[in-house]
Length: 338
Image (cartoon, rainbow, N blue to C red; front, top):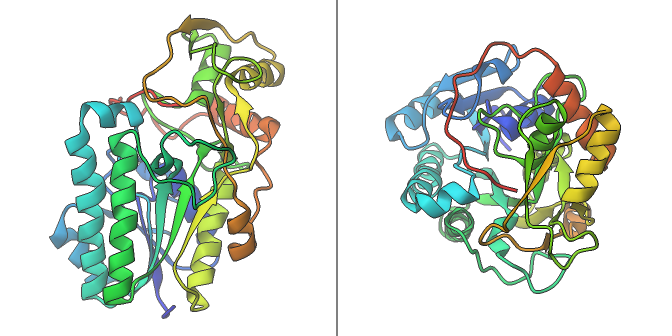
């Protein structure tokens, strides 16, 4: 990797801000974010912030002209499964077209090292667990389809233009920075663990979307990974590319699942509060269980999760919820997702 800064698109968002925290002691960092979901306050002091959108070719060109960029970590995307079913055009424009514009800006400025935030949604409803990277790619929503299209685009940019990419297929990000510097901050909050904690804090009851799955307690099972473990994987992926290694596609998960019921019980224990629950129907497209086989990431990046147990996930998220935020965020529309 040539000397220069790492451009983190979406670096003011939930995962993005943690990636920046992981990188800033090792690299100069430039954050590009349109703040549609992110918060300027989550960008650490000393990190260059550029307000802009990956859909804006002129803005992208300006960033690459004014900064020497050595590599890119791309996290700017719409990421709500339910919303993608209602508004697929928004997902193909923002995720697919935005990534195309970013890759073109990289190509114009000779940047060829790229870490991409993908998703386990590219697998759809898998036939076997745990899910390895060689499982069938069969998305069942526009979100997953948009990410898979980008993965395929990266293959051809590699073959034709020499772009080397590490594709990181996340399972379920959760938790918050242990030092309280960042955490999940959406209004309204679409994700499960913050919703459980909100119910524990006396907010609205948690809606349990199905309790009759073929799982040990009947509730859905997901592979939850601490956001700081995710962030560290991005830093290690950049090191991997800097060493001249070939493109790779890697799952990021723990290899074990936590059910909604287990998370509710753990939250009650950690907060000392009852979690109010109301039962609702299953949501269309929700598989019973999604669990990663992340052994390839361990072999390729020497990475393994170390903060992704249920207690750490919930305790750090609870501490972040209890802490005062820099300001009252402007409410944004969001869609529910597991």
